[in-house]
Image (cartoon, rainbow, N blue to C red; front, side):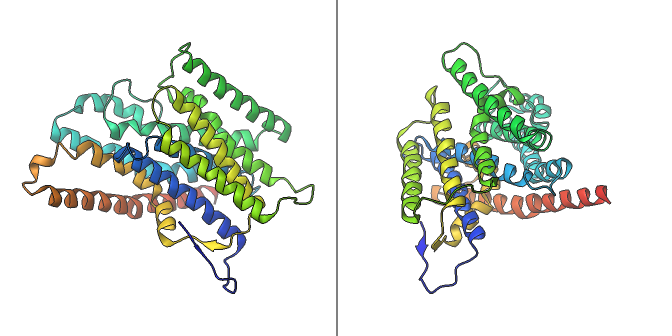
Length: 351
């Protein structure tokens, strides 16, 4: 998982190492999601990796918004251009594939306007590649809400609003659990359902933004042990709690809350004494494009099989190679340029 750094080695600055721990959480989250989707018997509850993503997003965007120099317009531009270009390409990429296969093409076209505008999930099942889009709809609406919550409200009103939204989310989940209401397919209402998962990370960022009013009382070994036990509890949920049915939202809430604890401890009390290996950083870097692309193998592996008259091993190598290429190209040719484009457009507007 990681290797220790010799005591006489030059450690990177603490902030960068602390953020590296967040990279580890992000890499773990995408590993959870991919493993549970491909090999559900080995990690039946791995979908709680989404909960880790939600908490990380809530923390990072709130941490960013708490900076005085970050404006609402600047934040929205950057987040939308960070998320949307790669998502747009994946949405459109499904069209020719479904057209070629002749399966679900018309239904997908009907749902496409709602998917592209991130406003609503289709009521009808359109495949696993479409089903994962709900998380992006939740995230983008959260990005639109939080700037006004952080920038426009006073500290006391902001904190009260966050507590109220967490309470609403928990009540909404309880109502759905007892079949008193149905979870809406509309993105803003779906956001209310998952709001607490994101806000636990936001609360961690707000607490960390406060000046410390008392001397630290936690010893470093105690912090390391507490973080390790918290992470092992998340791993236990992923290993033994099936990520389906009514209990899953409760498991998801617990995992987001535990992730917030790890984030808070790691940023306030933890002094890193190790470096994470390169695969962790790489996994974190490609996490978004991996998440967008990994359903292609699940969705289209069987339908395309008869187009490749080779043995099973060769076919698997071909499909995995194509998927890897798609992930890399999407990151370097779409996601990264999209981020830079957002910066340029924002700079041009502010001039």
